[in-house]
Length: 259
Image 1 (tube, rainbow, N blue to C red):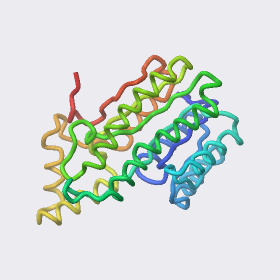
Image 2: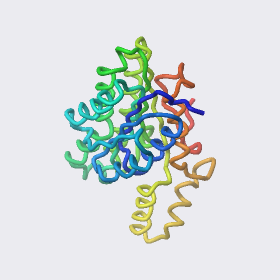
Image 3: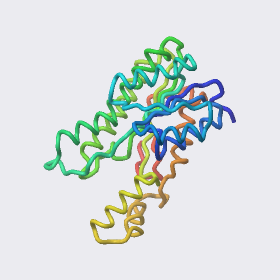
Image 4: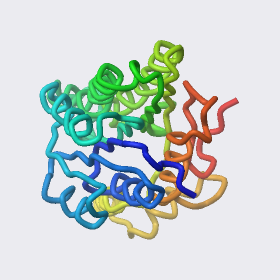
């Protein structure tokens, strides 16, 4: 299947975790890619592995100038942007609300939701509105449904992404642009494994105990892989989902059941 033949996609947060997985899967289906991250050496490795159809750029997506330069890279090379994957995110530091700092709060909001606004705004302005086509995919978290203790900053940011998705879908729909949001639960990445190792150390239990507890309340008793989430992201980004917009879709082994 070549769902992204002649399609140009930008993926933020493309240096580790889900980003490189999506990039490689989209490249296999014909996409040309701009891969962005603050750690440019890592994203360069991903682009090199993919080949000439991928360009690596250093970008802090909380900065308007960096976002504009990132989109200009795609426009200058290929003249259009068809897909915007707003994947950049940070977890912030775990703090109860009475411990919360303004720096922790503001930095998490900036990366996890403001950056998605900036990237969406720029691709809409530069390409999608004029061409009357495009797909924007945001990446929320199950924490954005009911919140998580010690993660007020992260929970609020991820909840905000779901509302931002609806607004973009409503405003841009008449221009043929779709916007959807994926809401993963725990994803089996290095970041998640590091988090579970930290929790195990803090509680004085084994890593296996923490991992088992993590999936105990999930109907499928498993954790999503990056590939599980990427499959949904590629579907939503593709023309196969041409009448799906404004939706937040859980990929979480049944953790949250909406409806």
